[in-house]
Amino acid sequence: MSSDSVLFDAPGPRARLRHSVLTVIGVLLVVAAGWIVYRKMSEAGQLDPALWTPFVTDPAVWTEYLLPGFWETLKAAAASVVLAGVYGLVFGMGRLSHVRAVRWVSGVVVEFFRSVPVLLMMVFLFFGYFATATWLPNQYAPMAAVVVGLTLYNGSVIAELVRSGVHSLPAGQAEAGLSIGLSPSQTLRSIQLPQALRAMLPALVGQLVVVLKDTALGTVVLYPELLTAAKTLGSAYANTLQAYIVAAAVFVLVNYALTVLAGRVERWLGRRGRSAGTPRSAAVPSDTVPTAEATSSSAR
Image (cartoon, rainbow, N blue to C red; front, side, top):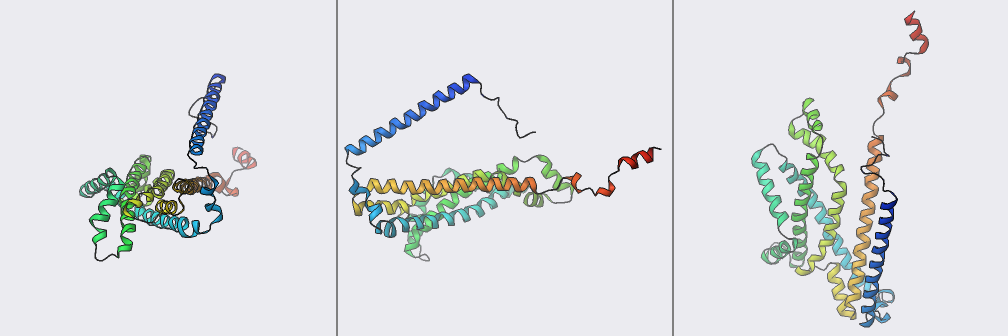
């Protein structure tokens, strides 16, 4: 299939005109909504420069509030991503196991933690276990509840992504592994799983963005992440709305950077996959290709 082929026909003149009209209407609606928000904030005095200047003139706003909160957000997100990745691979492969008991147990665990809201898991883990655990210092209890809650939920989602990614591969991949003497588990680990991980990279990055955003739920269990830092900052400088807006902007910028990075990684993997092998015709030595003179000689 050529790279120029498409799934749908190119839009005609009427369709292009309709798309242009809808685009203009959408832009006008966004501008109108922005104007309404701007007017309401202006009427409420929320655009007073005194409420915004501390973010530019006072270094303590960043060094004592926002940056420490952002660092705590990154720590919880990084730990959750690593643990959720391991959890997802283990239980994803468990759901693909040929042993019925392993497949059943993995399915129950994954479906259970996918069904429970992350916030409830954090609350139950914090107040029901970590806050009263004698082996864990009290200052680490909020982070433990956040990380474990995010790991259980997002790891279950990743496990389902692994299962669906492997099932989306052509059946010939598994048959090829079995035909060369590999066991079903070896075929899964060596052939199917690497291809599935590469195919589901966009979904995995989307889940990474979800993990980073869901760290904000840690404010309920007193974890000092970015949202909690913004709340404390708003109380200290009497600009709660402005602090939340700046924190939201930080979340948007970081998530956008992750999305851009994922796109570049996906394109790099695509180029690497296309250039990994040498065409068979190029690998044939030149002295084995029959020339026109040799062909005519043999014919005589």
